[in-house]
Length: 135
Image 1 (cartoon, one colour):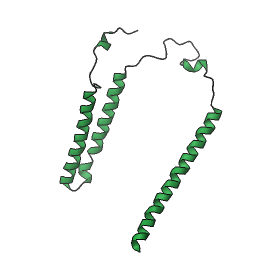
Image 2 (cartoon, one colour):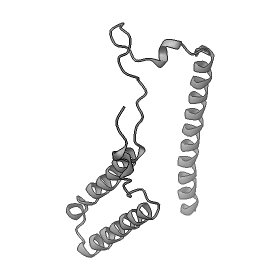
Image 3 (cartoon, rainbow, N blue to C red):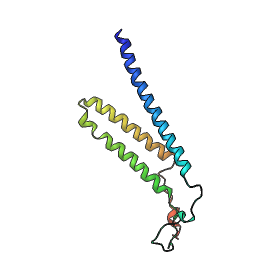
Image 4 (cartoon, rainbow, N blue to C red):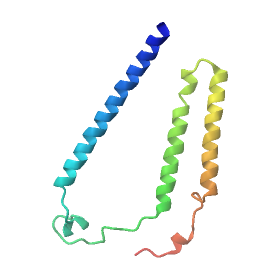
């Protein structure tokens, strides 16, 4: 008899989580629908220009950006954050064997991510972009 009460406790928690997710989806759908009704359908011509105290723009506002810088910065953030997350595990865990196994699996996954990025050429730096003169 007690096993059934445990099942009903778990299923009631799942039910409340489902209700919460449904209400969240419903509220976000309503907000999205209302915002689509009040949005401007026509784009303003001045929205494409940067604002410089009411004066004409000196330089173009859409400067080309090297995607390689962005990829390197995202990779740095991912690997840096994952490494910083793994450092406090040594103080939290009292079992050193479990900590060493966890960190070794974690570092192996990081190493596999690095190998995948090298394989796809995300870390290969193209030197031809530096030979192109700046506008």
